[in-house]
View 1 (cartoon, rainbow, N blue to C red):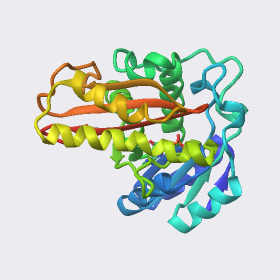
View 2: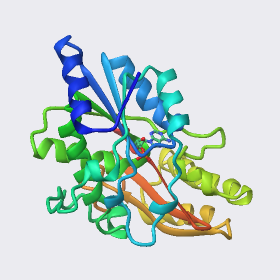
View 3: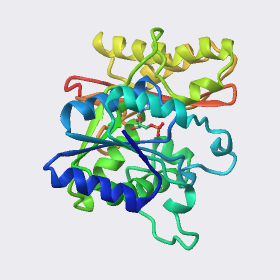
Length: 284
Ligand code: AMP
């Protein structure tokens, strides 16, 4: 496994793999790798001949007052996780390699970024789509792997790739969870012991929603209300949103008819957590 820091060297290594007719799989990450990232890497290793993982904490997707400055990082640990998982190339560029000071070009996906996290984190998805477009241009993968955990991100990236005719396939992998249901996240490290316990209420609420939909409840207001109640059991929880949306448009829906995305963002103490599930007949 190789570690490279520059765009030129990532291009050279990928070109050498291509010259051997290898297919290129790509897993973009912000590092502090965990079981969720590993599941993406393992899927990439299964499907592709040459697997690239990028590690870059992207400043343009963090808003003022968010956790950019304290975002966890552990390159040494990440390298050994990648090595064990069968990665061929780790691309860990510095900020100046990724962005020129004079950068004035952005990729902005409209409409799909207006609701859910996009509504509460203005500019976040513009940062995500811009860095992914840049990384796709640097790595030129055949397939890129994203997690269902960040459902809106995966939908927005798919749309960007389609709208801009990017020659790659986007694969979305299931959310990896802790035994109590909490979605694995780099940010779980910030939680105190009590907060960590309370954080399991997010997946409890989603599971309850799934159960109620299975039992015939289709009214979104009632479903959201019962999720609210469950999460409000924690005195540390501040709910940012609990929404049920059309999985194609990401617009709020009132009544579930077919597949729907149930998504939520909750601050537990000062740590912002997100989670989601699909419900409905055409479950994806
Ligand atoms: P991040 O490093 O947080 O930017 O995440 C990199 C990729 O890993 C994104 O595509 C995430 O959706 C994905 N990911 C993060 N957590 C999980 C998880 N618990 N299960 C599956 N994928 C995940």
